[in-house]
Length: 61
Image (cartoon, rainbow, N blue to C red):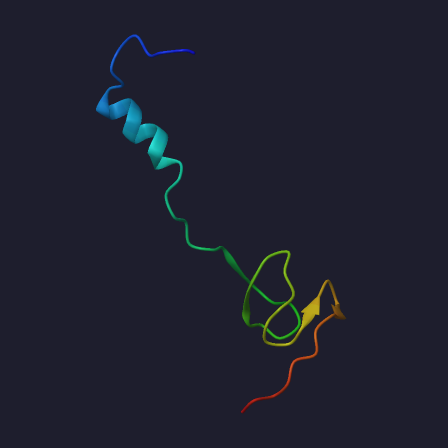
């Protein structure tokens, strides 16, 4: 089994762990209704994706 020859430095360890930090989801504007929605996902407000309705959304207001 491979064993490290030297102690991993704090900078190298923190640089490696920095890639796993949390990122906020990127939101884009829905072309159908204008609400904020994640890209490549059906809009939660209107249910449209790529110009056609894929979800049935009830008006809860």
